Length: 232
Image (cartoon, rainbow, N blue to C red):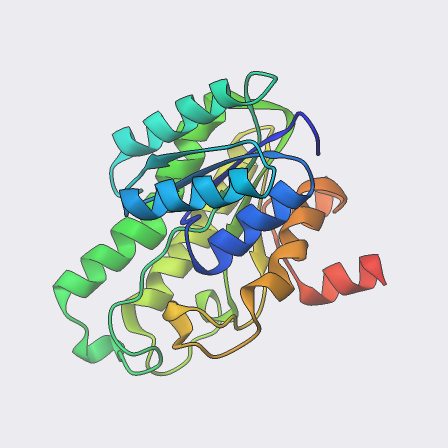
């Protein structure tokens, strides 16, 4: 992936950080965004210490102007102008995962889940569109909870369903490949530390950005099964 530029929101921890490391290992220029500016600086320094070309911008995906600055920075960072891959991994979960039933959800939690996990994905894709190179791909992490109701996930599940709907909309209305990836349950703060280690699933994102058939990814959800079948 030399000379390719990858943008990762939520790139300082969890899935986002593991994905940033994986793309850096493949030789890509990696640009990370996250709310915590100190964490962004630390992540960029660690990527550079490992030999990668990296940059970062403090980014709150709830603010489209922050996202605009991130993608504009990314489009100027690599050897070639533009962006080749976007991973919209920024996300939040308010409460104890699995213990936030819809009927007891606060409006504040609903609003921030939707603004971050739903509208934030919409803003990330929309602002990136003018900077995408030909053949670029946009990848959005998702999970079964977005489509299959399970008790206790409240407005978080609603926000993930919103993100999937945004992906389908951009896939239908543009000529870009925009798709979702379901890595299964991953051990992050959002899952209470339960599941696979983020580094175990990060190669799924590299595969989706490079080798997965575009016609199968576009507007769809690919997961561990498709990745393992294609790479075994």
